[in-house]
Length: 174
Image (tube, rainbow, N blue to C red; front, side, top):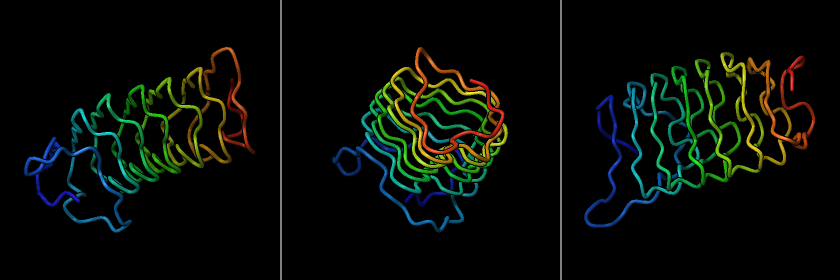
């Protein structure tokens, strides 16, 4: 876990000569210093962001993800109340359950073309997210994906993904 007090955090590429390739899983207890983080930059070379990594960074507004990223864990950005936009780079093929849950300021999401499925409640509680463009390779969306989001419009390309239960709010247009 990050132990500093900076509000603008840039993760290191190495520690004591050893390359860093991921952010480890974290507990669901949010450290006090995480509450003031406003911006995060994760450099190239990182392949994964662990479960709960930024859970509860309630003032996080901006995050820059590397193109080397492949996996984002469960609840990695849940309860980041001020996050407005997320661009998930192509190459990410796994986004964990409730990854962006309760990001109530989230308005814009760019999903990678490499993603094939979205797990439970990925965007649940994202009340300002009203439109999402689902990539062509997305094959399945599992139950209650964004049931409590503000989604009103979902764009699909050439085919509609397989849904489990009701992944979007009632009245969502495809």
